[in-house]
Length: 236
Image 1: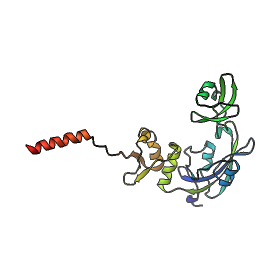
Image 2: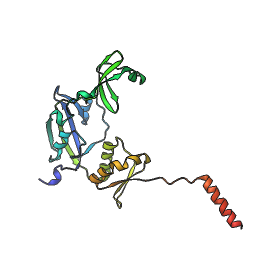
Image 3: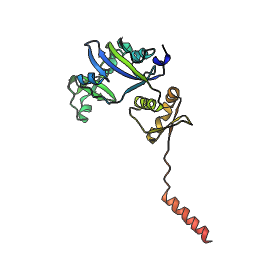
Image 4: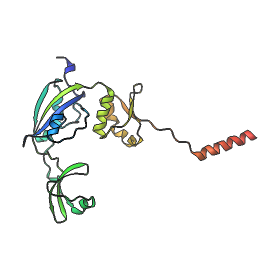
């Protein structure tokens, strides 16, 4: 079989998948439109593109992608340690009720909230304290993925978009400088994190990162003084 038909490590590929919780056989995640409707999951409409072997999906799923044939449907069952991890008792914490009330939230047992960039589950509310579970809802669960690798990605811009969503959580405007082998971003607020992610982009794409700085605005006072000096010289 030709190598082009097999997904290899560091290949960028588009995935179609469905994830099931084997405890109750319920679908917990998917990007298949018909299946998403069944669990009332709203999809972004964008394809899921990942780089094989780079931890862009859970460990066991990531490992399973390598060596798989494009266009063929696969199924893999994962134990908790290769999925969303085992439950950690230290991630179950008591938080003062007043912290929730300050955000105009009245916590109730079973409620799932976004807290500190994590999905957390309210276990109980007792007096002025709330018992909250920071474990992933699927921690400690065995799961199953059904998946198909739809295609390999060769276009550099598609690869950059995929890495942006993974590392930054959103997309920023950029250009590709083929001569310098640079991904040139236009948003200066990315400047503080360029050094942190430059090695990953360089390793996976062969392109470094660069910020296109906007031209500095000329200070009106400096321009005024410059014109006065020029006028004075010309009148001598």
